[in-house]
Image 1 (spheres, each protein chain N blue to C red):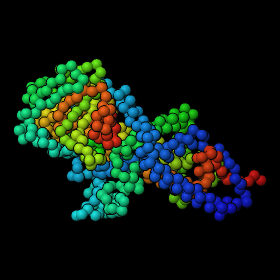
Image 2 (image 1 turned 90 degrees about the vertical axis):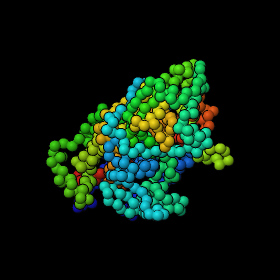
Image 3 (image 1 turned 30 degrees about the vertical axis):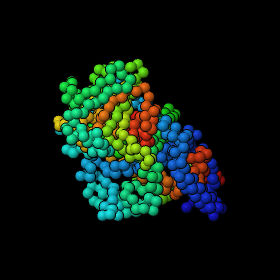
Image 4 (image 1 turned 45 degrees about the vertical axis):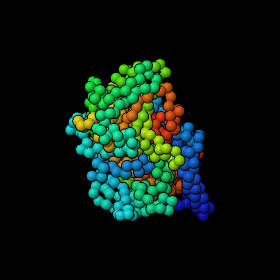
Length: 274
Length: 261
């Protein structure tokens, strides 16, 4: 522990306006895409591999209800069944136990309404793509993406140290806190350059119109239903990323982090000069 | 100092949570307002605009080998129309069935199933994508819609082809008669080489669950565009005055008219 008397706080400019605006547009777009996506999933709560659906014969994932009357909700993955009554498969709608994959409190709109869910999803998909393209263009043209996100060889070799820091929840507070550490860089790179583009492609692979333009696209995923499964799995990985991201914000000073992403200014602790 | 920061943090997080809950609750109301509807429509318009830029009138949907045909093909929506005229036709094996082609055409006509089967046919094995998310692959044989439209001769005002169907659907209004299923496509899709009036599926006459005696195939769009149980083909300049005015039964119930995604 550093002696508090020997350190003082300095405020540095960390996030430029374009990045901050892109970040918050992204928060709204990804939230709407997730909740409307769960609404769309509910219309056919099964995932398959290949071009066509198995209709319950051998789905890799299915969420439904069982019993007579149907009173038990379940999630079935790779043949194993987990009962999830009250949340997944069977949940209350206006007080009545109702068969639906994801519950009303996490879908957009809340009631079962595929048509409106699709409209939300596709409108915010456009907003998400436009925002992402602006972010990437600025990041590439300014060289910021390379400077801030590509780890150096030395950083990659130091990944063990960074991993230990994360696992023991000890994070840098000084000058080091203004730069992303190697695990942060890799996580952001994987999300920005792999998961999000792949997510857009998997979404497009489900479009019969786009598939006529690019018949190779659904085939690259192993068929339209495989693309649908990939789209769902990536959505869940993005949810996991957001949970870890939020946990890190909470653990490293949420007020300071929020101020950094809202105003751009971020406080660091520096050694008092003698 | 520490205590103050903690309170501020709680306040901020509480505020974020409350804001989020309000935003979600508000989304439903926003979506049903007129402005909300216009905004949500913008996404569909953008999708149609971009897909029409990318798709030429001749771009074909992928056709699969015979080995890819689904062993069982789910029949969705109406599977046995509750309509007296339809039941009478079905009881006689559709021998008395006549498809009517009319509206904004130079020479309206009627055509029987045998006459349709005698016309040059196209067979295609394609993937059927339902708006719900599932897919199945089937083989379809039928007459390209283009051939019938050319025979009838379109008037200059013609813009859309409306399919009138035998099957009736649920209505929000219990006092009015249940609406008949209908659909519409524009001339780009109507003249597309894969747009068929299909009378056979997987090498056998089209079964009742799949739309006997005749259904539409529009391979670059979703399943609800591919009307089953065709009664008549009507060429129009606008569908604003047909039923709900949105161009189809599902469109009248909130679904996009352009179903390429």
